Image (cartoon, rainbow, N blue to C red; front, side, top):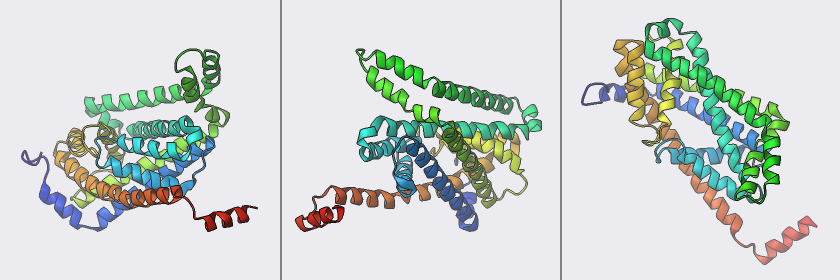
Length: 318
């Protein structure tokens, strides 16, 4: 893209030097991570897995660290699953299930933001058939996704009981426990609604962060409503497991999307995406601090206590 002129390294470097804009982008990332950690902790609490917001934030940062070095945005979920399974061994399927539910709710809220933004960009969608098709897909996926989630939650009890009666079949018990992950949300649908609603401001913050990245590379005349439509569509592509943190994939996607919106904006989309991803990788790499601290904590907790300390602990318990 640099060789073809679609990506201007000079503008990207200049945008990074305008430190106020990258600092603003970093702030949107930090607030978003804090909110998503709270969402995951909310889902875990419904499963009687209580780790607290601080530990959920630490594990989220560790997952994001691995997202920055493993292609796609699912590698971090695997690492989070490894740690949370060890943290709650008696409720391993339930704890692991919250990661899938959290991911689904995050995707659903991203599609919701895209669908809502389409209403404010009808003139743009009517002029460009491709953007109109993408917006139609987002609206359809939002509707279908919400319906599938609601159906899965409200039929989880009968499905779990049916599998329980078929206990002789291979993997039926495991399947029953996996479906049972949805039972607490069936009993308390408000938990799912809160977790879904929490994702909406996260994606709005992502749009704001990308807007600041675009300002850093010289954009001043692109309406904010365009960012609310184009940024979620571009972020969907960066989840494709082809490159760490979506680097390269994101530049191509945002170049195309911004060029569709206006022919002279293609380079802006690629340049802003590069600044955005530069800050993203820096924030994600800070998860190394949490990774080292969490591993040290796990090692210390697994070490046998000295006899004096063990006796003192028993005395305090008595």
